[in-house]
Length: 69
Image (cartoon, rainbow, N blue to C red; front, side):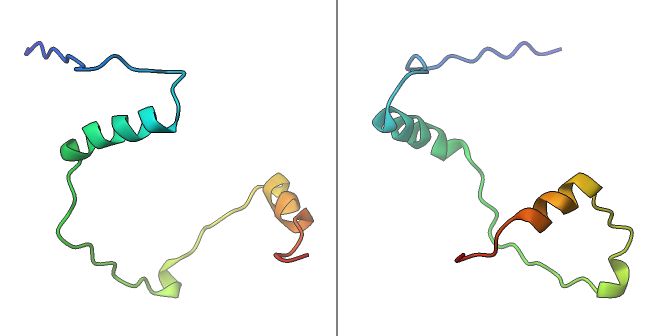
């Protein structure tokens, strides 16, 4: 088994501000892999079945006001 050691170049600032969050993101960005292209294929409505919504969720959605009220 390989023992992988990770070392952070800068200590994490858990109580930081937006600037420190942006700095953290900038340091992580080079490690994120971005696919060349994502192609979504349409799904036939006949293949979508068996979706159930719990009654509590249905009541919650029913009680929400419409957008713009």
